[in-house]
Length: 72
Image 1 (cartoon, one colour):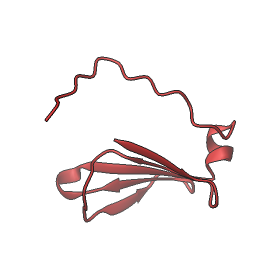
Image 2 (tube, one colour):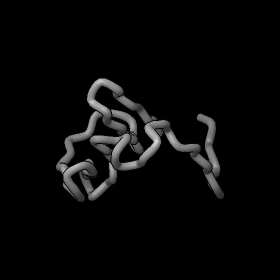
Image 3 (tube, one colour):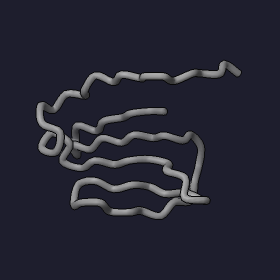
């Protein structure tokens, strides 16, 4: 997973799956869109006007619970 923020356009992108994927976009609101890949795989989440949508303008703390990682 990769989370990136572009201050120039105030957009946050959460990439859940690495690599190139042909996606369709499901627009949830004017600011929030989901990128859906093959087999309905959620590839990423885009949030426009991030500072307005989520408030403070800083990335929130991320807490991972009950997640196991496999080292390759």
